[in-house]
Image: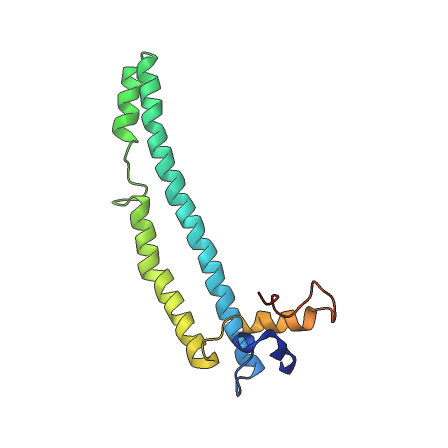
Length: 147
């Protein structure tokens, strides 16, 4: 991994860190990134469910306008504001996920990167960038242009 030097210090493997450690940190980082994606889907679920709940208000109004009071009352009573799982709205699911799983995961990943690689992120990806670049190609530069 010696050729990674031209990427800059932030992406250089610290002295004494072996390739197996870099690969392990890469796997840990990928797992966290996957968790970030899962969390995004959870926020999507939260927002879509909330939007659907507010759309029910519109449906109730239209049912009433169309003369279907019984059905309007049924939707209003049974669905508007309903828990999505027993005792919980989606914001509570998001909060529980964040406190029970996401934050501990992110904090542990950060601490391990600090402990094993001086806090340097994406060392495996930086290595892949180095070995996959075409030398002297203008779109394969190691770092962004200086301002």
